Amino acid sequence: MDVTVYHNPNCGTSRNTLALIRNSGIEPSVIEYLQQPPSRATLVDMIGRAGLSVREALREKGTPFQELGLDNPATTDEQLIDAMLAHPILINRPFVVTPVGVRLCRPSEVVLAILPAGQRGAFTKEDGERVVGEDGKQLK
Image 1 (cartoon, helix red, strand yellow):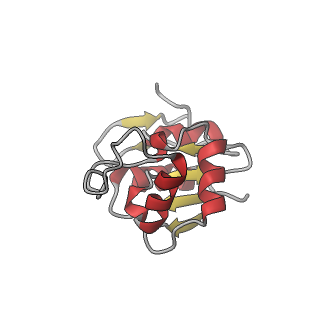
Image 2: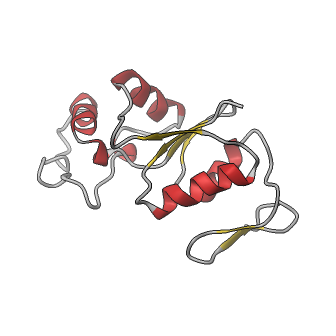
């Protein structure tokens, strides 16, 4: 099954999302997007297929968002995409692409809706929150 996760190993949400994918028995293609940013076409496609606006796909916390003036409402989507490609830390994460769909997986359990296989057992996030029961079903 072709599943791709745009991953940041320093992000707990990204690590939990990757673990949920693996808990379904799928070994995804893992792209560390800070080292290998997506192309413009791929980024625009993922944002569109996820049903997001460009602004919704933009990460503010821990990024040069303010310094670059990206909070200015006059900044166009093209300018925002340019900034995301120049500074990949501005791309919110993790994006997951599966045959079922594309999502920005925040929170990480959003990925469950687009996985082509069910969970194989219980899953607890790094912070201790249980999101999948022993029966492989989502708890909330």
